[in-house]
Length: 221
Image 1 (cartoon, rainbow, N blue to C red):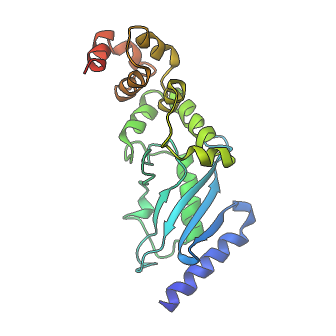
Image 2: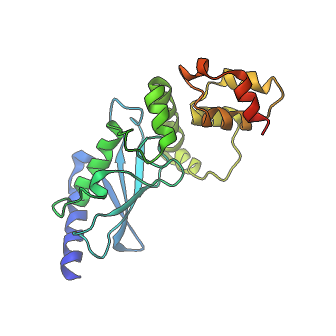
Image 3: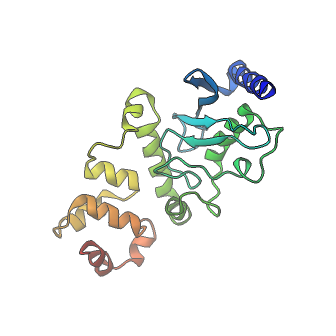
């Protein structure tokens, strides 16, 4: 217990000393074994300009078991669950090593935002979007970054309990509003249209592959 506490405190101090990495650490309930880490979105990616928070729990078996980490900030990424923030990253599972630290783990998460692994996704729907319509994916990821990861307004938007407009829902799903408008014009409710188009991956080249009859059939269910 003493050795584990000493190591964790040393790793927290290491994060605070590394000003270049711009990593911040906040204790939860004054416990070094439960912290909130934060880092910037990588430059040149849809996450640039965002500040991303993760919940980090240090297990009793640390450093022989990995940290338990999930995103607090909502992020649109194949390896992060859109709803829960759960993460699919090898070093948090089979590739964990006791030589890894809190700082190196958070930097790996930051790097993961730059290098999605859609073939081993945490969110298969987002991975499909990434693989089939990369430009639309980037636009959607950028929209989520603006909505959820930029300052106090973004923090408020992390509360998904409120009612969203059709425009917001379409932006979050990466669905072009013109497509939503077309099916709304047929008498279908806007948010349901967004949900169906999202589920069917009505994006990019897939738009031409999906017949209107198929969409209408799903909307009528």
